[in-house]
Every structure is written in structure tokens, then in C-alpha cells.
Length: 367
Image 1 (cartoon, rainbow, N blue to C red):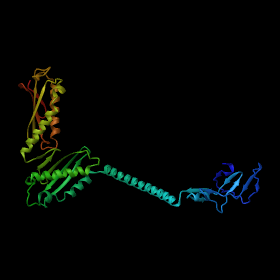
Image 2: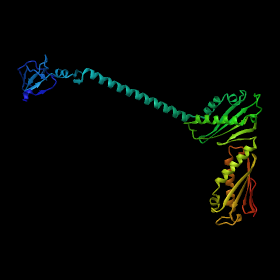
Image 3: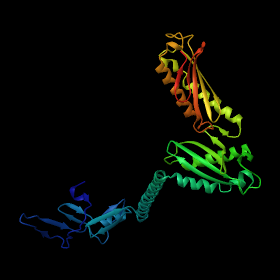
Image 4: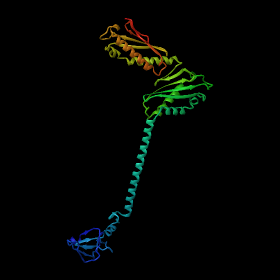
């Protein structure tokens, strides 16, 4: 193929030569342009040229771009503002591409809206967690259990008032029961214990739901239900079980549970307090809601360094007995024994004549 037959598709946008066969000279450095008309373009036997005539300029064939593009099914437009020639596929394909771009833009806008809504929801959740207030939760509980008298005890004249106290670690509820308008119940001792526990179970469940995702969500829950006219009648919840002030059977179980917890806690007391892991410790409790008496027995039969109680440091003995008393107080908190005075005794397991007595104020050593 000769140079004269090579087709270069360029835009004749700036200058169109209207005088054919002429010679044009530009600038100081003379540039000679020779242009000839009369060229016919064929593609696969089909003539492409029309009124827009190609030109041969300096041995190159210059073809109108629109003529070529439209013959090949392309769309071409001139953007005079930016001096650009815009070429795209067929009008149908161009429209499809435009629609796709519009859909993509709409999708971006929709995603931005979703992101904004998610951010708003997160802000509201954080605001709820930060602004959570026990008074607000208290109002929700009172409203939710407004008909508890009828719903749980079939007496709409039985009224309940719920108050909350505590912090992020521990929340305690107090339910005051007013039986004054009731014709069925004189005081809370007349209420079914099963129904009482159903009500308090539901109260705890609702409370846990309301504190979820707030500053209080990890708080331990304890509580009490008391007769508003007689505070001696109450039901206490320690986070595990319920106890009733008018039922000695529950009190005995509570005291037994407290004793087990305390004894387990001091299982290694021989080593911890007396540096002799061979000393075995036994702890039992007795008493009532007014006074608890502990009995500590130290077994020296397998001790490594001590023969009996008299060989132990008195200061270590007192420190140990004080720790036991403190632990009993902690385990009794939230039970019917929480206000009880605590006295006690420490004895030699093998020789009952050797003991230390604590009367609530001072220690008395028998040896």
C-alpha cells in the first residue's frame, strides 16, 4: 500500500480547505500544503463517501470523522464549549451506558442514605446507653406492672410500687405491696409463694431487658418485696433464691447456704493464714435473723508445723476470725440474715478445752 492510500482519520475542526489544488504558505517558515479533492472511500465494496469529500493533503488522505463513525454505527457529537469531539457506540448502546451510569449514581446516593441512617441509629443507641437512668427504668417497670395485682394474684385492688437503687455493678429492686384496699389479702403472707416468685421472676426479666445495652447491662440483680404496712413481712432475692421472713424453713436453707459458701472460701486457710497447708478448717453457722454464731474448728492431725491451737500466733488467729466474720457479712447481704449480729468461736478440733471466743467486741483465749 502506497503512502497516498493510507487513511488517517483526523478532525478537520480548525480549518477546512475550500480551495482545492491551491498552495497555502504559513508563517515565517514557509509550510506548503497541497490539497486535492475527488477521493472516493469504499469499505467491503460499499461506498462511504458522500457530500463530505475526503482530501489528499501532502500525500495523506484526510477523511471527515463523522462520515466514518456514523458508517460504523457510532454516535459523534461536537462539544463546542470544551472543543471536544465525543464518540460513543450506537444510540441504543449509548443510552444503555447512560442508564447504567444513572443507576450507579442512584445506587451511590442510596448507599449514602443508608450509611447516614446507620450512623443515626448508632448515635441513638449510644445516647440511650450513655443517658440510661435508673429512674427512667423504674418508671417503665411501674407502668409495665401496673396491673400486677390482677394479673398475678387475681385482685385488682392489690397495688405494687417498684423502686430501684444501685450502680453499674449491682442493682437492687424494692417492691412495696399495699394490701389496704384488698378484700382477699390482709398482708403479703397471704400471697401464694409460687405466684410471688412468678411475679418477681418476670420483674427481673423485664429489668434485664431494659438495662440491655446500657451502662447497667452487666449489673447483678437482687431484690426485696415488702408489705408496705408491716416491714417485718418480706421476701428477699439474693440473685439465686428467694427467702421469706415468715418461713423458718427458708431461713434454715439460707443459713446453710451461707455456711457452705464461707467454708469453701476458707478451704485453704491453713496455708493462707498460718503457713501450714496441713491444717484443716471446718466452719458451721447457727442462729437466726437477729444473731449468727459461727464455729471454726482447726484440725492439726495432718499439720506440718503445729501440734495444737496454743502454738498459733494469737494475732494470726484474730486476723483469721475477723476475716471469717467479714465473709459471713458479705454472704448474708441480701438475705434475711443481713442485719444479724455476728459472734463466734474458734476451737481445737482435737482438744475442746482450747478455744478462742468472740462476743462481738473482743477476743477471749482459753489458754
